Structures are given as structure tokens and as C-alpha cells.
Amino acid sequence: MAGAALLEFLLRIGDNTLILGHRVSEWCGHSPALEEDIALANTALDLIGQTQLWLGLAGEVEGKGRSADDLAYLRDGYEFRNILLVERPNGDFGKTLMRQFLFDAWHYLLLKALKGSSDTRIAEIAEKAFKEVSYHLDRSRDLVIRLGDGTAESHRRMQEALDELWPFTGEMFMSDALDAELVGEGIIPAPESLKAGWDEIVAEALTEGTLKKPADGYMHKGGRRGVHTEHLGFILTEMQFLQRAYPGATW
Amino acid sequence: MSSEWPLWEVFIRGQHGLNHRHVGSLHAPDAEMAVNNARDVYTRRNEGVSIWVVKSSDITASAPSEKGPLFDPSNSKVYRHPTFFDIPDEVGHM
Image 1 (tube, each protein chain N blue to C red):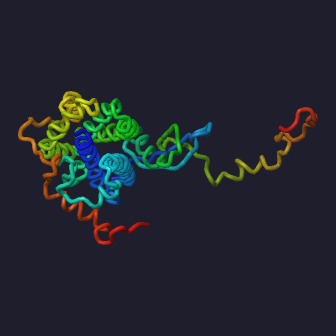
Image 2: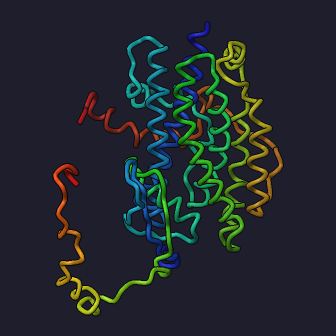
Image 3: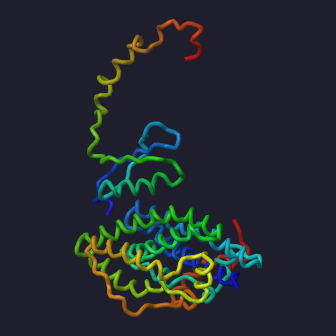
């Protein structure tokens, strides 16, 4: 049934932007420089803004009267559909940027394809988000290159971040029967079809940043069907605290 | 880290403005990042359509101590203002 597959897709994309947005927002007030602090906060806000649109539409498609806020704050971990990459801990500034770059390159290609979705609601959200994400990619790519090709210390940190995060990149290109159904209806691009473009963007930046691309070995997966690492629970504990402790609280 | 980065002056041309106006300053390692940082720091509320950055150290300023000699003399030169022409009524408001 198309409704179920569509809902699943919207949760997957909306949870990616929600969890990554939350992760990035954890830097607010802690970045190495004021300028970076504001830039990261802007990125986090862009992602949370996109979440409102994706989860808002998810609630609409579900048809049970749940709002974007209900979906964000009142679901448990196993109901979240984000990929494992976005729930990885921030680590140092370099690791946060590497995670951002690996995600941005994929996010950029996904939104670019979604602009041509046969579902106009999705195409419209993608159109708006694409501009924001184009800038995210410009920025994270630039910083990955600079820090990769920077000092011995920054190079070491970026290579370590890359090696650690690489096994979490495979999940972006995995697909299941639900994806296939939406691909067939022209609503989304086939996840695996984004791989070649992603490889190209990533390889180019890594080469320029004098970083060594890790070999494609075992790839972690599970987030897309609700099986998460222990980190998601901690994220939700903090993110959902207010609504859990004071149900329905507003300001 | 910021202390190692040079200071840049930021000029933004607003939505309807004709000129770039000085809006503030920030730190960045080079010009390209200064533009990016300016975008993130100074155009968050839709303030601009164009950004200029220039290294603060590249700006040559007049010395505050010479304010008197530099600017006071023009105080008494009222004839430099175009206020002594009779404008015909037909011209209307200028």
C-alpha cells in the first residue's frame, strides 16, 4: 500500500534531518570560534526547519492527526527511522565536520533528485531544502579539505574521523521493498542510484584534502528499520525531556 | 583560534540598497572563508544580496587626532552647499 511506503520514506528523511539537526545543535556555544558556532547553529536550524516540513507531511499522510511535534517528541527509539550515521556522537570538531560532509554530499544528491518527484508535495519541500543543503555541502566540503590538507594534527584527526565514520555510509544507499515501491511510482530515486555521484563528490574532496579513502568493508545498518545504536536513546532523552515530563507544554 | 585569524571588515548590500554598507567585522583565515562566515553571521535574517570583505589591516584610516585640521575648516564654507540658487517654481520639489 502506497500510503505505508510513503509514510516510511517521510519518517526516514525527516528523522535524518531531526537527529542530525539535534546533534549539530549540541555544538551551540561550544564551537572553536564564534563564526563557526553561528555557522553550525545555522546548519542545525536549517535541518530542524526541514524536519518540520518532512514530519509535518508524514503526519498528514498517516492521517491520524499527529503533528510534526508529536512525531518528533512522542515516539520511542525503535520508531525512529534515521540512518545510524547521523546519531554518531559529535566527537571533536573535525569528526562533526566529516560526518556533516559525508551526509551533505548524499543529502544534496537525494534532494536534487527529489525536486523531480512525481509527488508535488515532496518536490516542493525538496526545492526549498536543496538551496540550504547546497550551502551546507559547500561549507563542509571546504572545511574537510582545509583540515585534511592542514597541519599534521588536523590531518590526523580528519583521517581518523573518516576511518571511523566510513562503515556508516553504506546505509545511505541500501534499499528495501518499500523503497522499490516508491521508486516504481517515480516518487523517490533508487537509493543505490545516488552512489556513483556521491563517490565522485567524496573522492574529489578527499583527494584535495590529502585524505585516504577507506576500503568499502562491512557496513553498519539498522536505523532505517528502527534498530539503532545506544546513542539514539541518549539523544531522545535530552530532546524529548520537556514533552515527556510536562506533556503538552507550550511557550 | 580566533586570535590567530586576521580580522575582516564586512560590507553588505541590502535587498533594496544601492551601496554596500559596513555592518561589522569577523575573524577568518582567508577571504573565501571570510565571505562564508559573513554569510552565516550577518545575513541570517535576509539582510543581504551581496557581500564584500576586506582585511581590516588593509584599511587606511584618518587619524582621530587630526579631526580638527581635517574637518573643522569645512564648517565655515556654507557657499559649498548649493543653497544659494533661486529655483524656478516650475521645477517643483527638488
